[in-house]
Length: 216
Image (tube, rainbow, N blue to C red):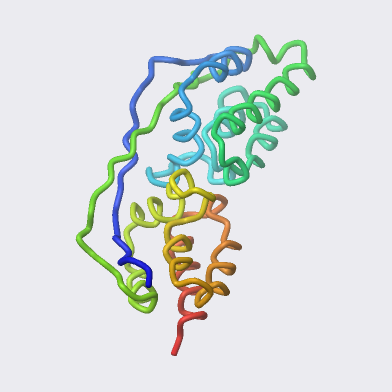
């Protein structure tokens, strides 16, 4: 029998690094040395903070490319990067740099074009809270999911992938403790895309999956 599931909440704290870039070449150079927590924040932080910029682009690099250096082709390429495909943030950094270098090679003017707004590198620090809620059976979790905070969804379904040995979310990792009993549910959860969505929509999709597989 699996241990009780401990429900937690979190906040992603933004911390200025002092690093900035005003040209695409400068952005490439800063990416070579910036902390991996910056890469994490600029891909995932938008899910937890209010978004007032372009909803077409999920990550801050694509948004900056589109609206500050006005390079739509680069913005579209950066927007296609799915960080869930990179369990290692160092590999995600390399993918970013490779795409930017490819674009720099395509234009003689772009490396020196000055952005209308600088890109400010921000690193993340996650603060975790225990909600004092414990779940012993998947049916209890099914009842809780529609009411989870955005922070709980982020912590258990997104940030968990950095913590679990095989990159699973916390819900799936817990369900696997029941051996094969909930394997079909785990397989269905694995199909859910945690990135190209909002936390509200993600919670709704999770709730639907749990309801479908655990309805009595």
